[in-house]
Image 1: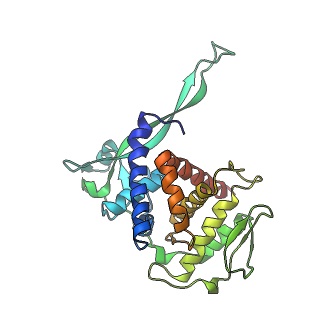
Image 2: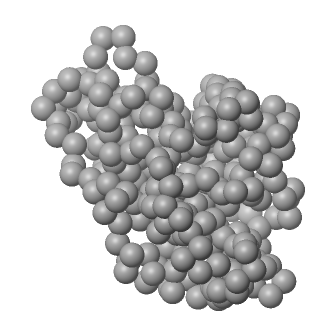
Image 3: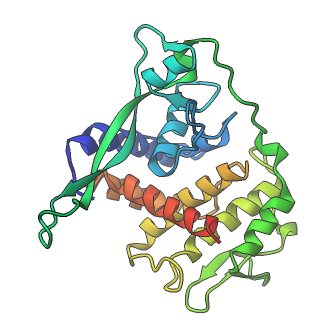
Length: 289
């Protein structure tokens, strides 16, 4: 991703914060860098449009909500809050929310015809969390992760048409050559303090489903480093989990990638945005099935 003034303002500080959290987890495994994904009372949402935030916006608002100890992951601009009867509190610090604005130029083939889109400009607006405002707005009711619908998730998984096997090999994985996911039986997943066995199972399955979108007959994702692909799959699991109210749980091999992610993000802070974009593209691919 090309670095611009906007990426410096939006992505760089966030990447620095993520790196610090990953480094803390290396020192203390109980301090998970992705703990923010397990404490939502709402999906990342714009209060005015009711649109669910996607990609890097979903991830940044989730982190901001968690570490600022806000109750709801609901944001809007000052103008949008005003239309809802709320105003930002004095001194409230906004969160940058990115968006793309199409760029048009005169056609070289037909200078007198309609302008053609030649690209997009990366811009950002200033979003305020509901907790940073005052007024009459009432947040919508949101079901917590413990109220997930297994039937809905199973129907979604079936609709992806990705072959899922259940070989007892002691691990779960996606085989790109043969294009199938192997999941050990649900009985091999155990309840823990952070989530029940069912949540662990579907969190892992979402991870592997994200991997499967990289296959040539689906998105044919660029062959990047294995560690980067794992970050894409982790974020894809997060985004699918938010969609179905499943909390993200940690994988047994998660920690081994931390050093690689830390090194990569220190070298290029835009990688967190690239990974989020690819993860969102994977989620969107299944959404249109």
